[in-house]
Length: 295
Image 1: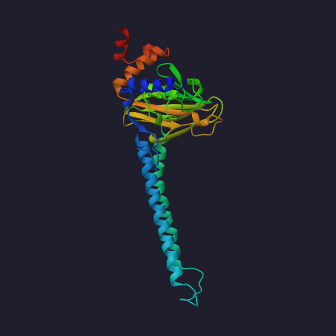
Image 2: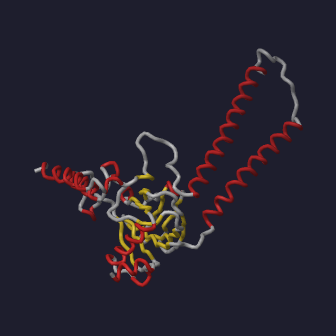
Image 3: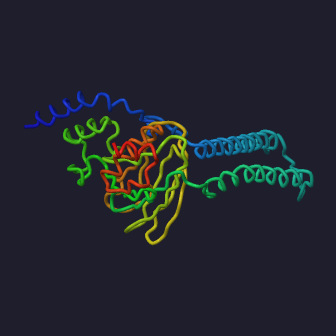
């Protein structure tokens, strides 16, 4: 009986070959460490700041180790049996006061603008409300008055039991993914056009969740009863993955986030279909899409 699901998985693979060509940009890689490739200006800024601070930390660590080694060799009991006795050294104290101040000023001068860039929200070309549930995400495209829920492929809501079975693998392939994207791929994804500013309003319906896309450099807790915001402008087409990043209960590990960044034309085509499928407001569609609807 197990042969039939495997057969279906193989058939789904063959039928979905064009869809499988999706460009997976923001996904973890097995055996790799470090940041994902930055997909936004915010992510690039954060990664640069992290690298700069690491250089400072490494330089300080090396300096301290070298000084300790020098003191151990130069002033040990055998080489220096009669140690000098003094309580302070004014030039040294001036140096170790001024240098840390300069380092902190450098870090602050570069980190505060990045923080302000994250928290000063531009006018959104696309506005989406995100709601975290136990254990899935709900999305509302408030500009067009429609919304949908997004479940992990393989979750109970999609007919699975959070395990990679042949049936689940068939669903993944049919959606244009592979078994490598299990626990990351969702049955529906957030779709946005490349280069456009997306402003998301984030909240929670039950407990605290956290909406995160590492490649975008964004993370925002979804707190019940509160509204918070984040923004991004993706620079490259592709599929970007994230995970709920706030421990939210038994199925916390099974509520991934998928964002598809597409061209403007592809987005308009998807938007037309989404308004029809999810009973949105056709009057909010751009003019060229209205014509398509009228046809």
